[in-house]
Amino acid sequence: MYVRSANNTQVPLSDFTHFETTNTPLAINHQGQFPVVTLSFNLAPGVSLGEAVDVIHQAEQQIGFPASIQASFQGTAQAFQNSLANEPMLILAAVVTVYIVLGVLYESYIHPLTILSTLPSAGVGAILALLITHNDFNVISLIGVILLIGIVKKNAIMMIDFALDAEREQGMSARDAIHQAALLRFRPILMTTMAALFAAVPLMLGVGQGAELRRPLGIAIFGGLIVSQLLTIFTTPVVYLAFDRLAPKKAKTGAAQGEPPLAPEPAE
Picture (cartoon, rainbow, N blue to C red):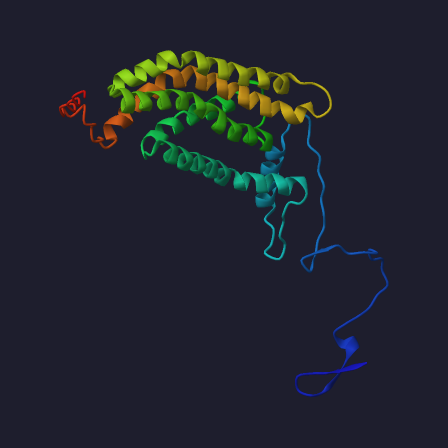
């Protein structure tokens, strides 16, 4: 067999090729029109998927893959990476949604920040609880943190809603209003927090099939509620007074401005 060369001459095919008989695979896997080889791995006891992914990335850097070879995760490892990539956006979206709803409710740009100031303590409590119990921060734990955003802020809502109502309706100062709110709302705050804590105990101490999946959720909720309960009772009034100084002063009502009361009409 001959092929035509660049100078329009016939060149035998045997000059630059050869053939031989050998064994080849029956099927070649492809992904995106490229041949691929799949390497599977299992986790050693006590090793999380996140640690295994980090070790594999380090091995890739040590090997030094050429530009023609690309490595990527599939299956569970890929789902794990995708969940980590979306974590900051999910938490930010939850916080922004809470801020918008509270801003519409209280007609203020400042006091929703007072309520959101309780969220860091819940996140710290959830992470500390996971560290103490030797559990990893996984997708289930992230769900617990998002749930804490909705559960923990009710402590501050109870106090701030009462304090704002006392300021607007009774004409009390911010210091007196938040002090009275902390005293009168302590029992409801404690009762609702204890109810949520007891609801998380079965998840945290559960056994049986699938318990390892639910346990990080209960631990995150339990730890976040305990720490936030201990801190927000004291920090919320302080943050409320600090932000109240930044809030624009509202016009006082006619009675507060010293306007004379209307004269009663004479009886017929």
